[in-house]
Image 1 (cartoon, helix red, strand yellow):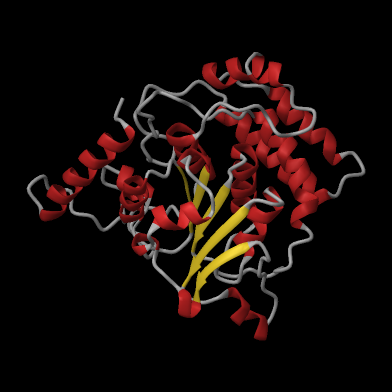
Image 2 (cartoon, one colour):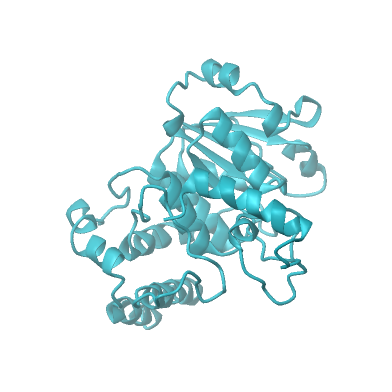
Length: 311
C-alpha cells in the first residue's frame, strides 16, 4: 500500500459495498448528498485546506495538525478535474472497477477518522516498527476495517503483530485469523510485540500458507457463510497476482495489500506493476511487443481485466 490513494481506489472500486459512515459527526445524508457530488465531480474544496490550517493555530498537537493538513491538501489536489488521460501523476493507470464504482468514503469521512485514529496510534505497543507499517498505512488499514465492519478479519503476514493490533483497534471483538511463518510471540524475547487473545494463529509450527488453507472448513468453524463479511489483509511479500487468484478462487471480496511497489522495485509482484502497461524509466522491463515478458504481461492483463474490468 505504498500509494495510499491508489490502494484506496482499488479497494473501494473492487470490493466495498454501500454503508453509512461509522464516525461520529459524519452525516449519512451528507455522504449521499454534497460530499458524494464532490467525490463524483471531483471539484476542489479549498475549505478543507483552510480548516486544517486553522488547526495549526489551535491547542492541538503540531504533529496531528500537520498530518491533517497533509490529508486536506491531498484531498484538495485530488478534487481537481482529472485530465483526459489513462494515467495519473505518477504514471500509474487509474484503477477501474468492473461495476464502475468509486470509493464510498469522502474527504470528511477521512478527516473524522484521522482525528479519531491519531490518539489511538499513540498507544501502539510497537513504537519502532522498522520494516513494518508506519502511520499512513496503519491509518489506511484501520479506516477500511472500521468502514467495512467485517465479521472476520484475516491477515497473511503478521511480523511482530502491529497489523494485528491495528485491526483490533478497528474492531474490538471481531475474530482474527493470522497466518505467519514465525509467531509474533517469538519477538517478545527481543522487544515489543503484540499477541491478540481473540486471534487464531496459523503461525510457527502451525503455519499454513494462505494458498494451502482449507478455507471452506476453517470458515465454517468460525461460523462464516457470507464471504462478503470477510476482510483479508496481505503483508506477506508474495506475488499479489498469485494472492489475488487464490483469494478470488475462495470467493473473498474485500482484499487489502500493504505493499504496492513501483515497477522495477520491491521484492514481489505488486498491483501497481500489474496495472503498469507502459515503460517507466528505470523499471527494468522489456517493452518489445514480441518479448517473452510482453506475452506474459498480455496474459496477466487479460486476467486483470476479467477480474476487475477495463472500462
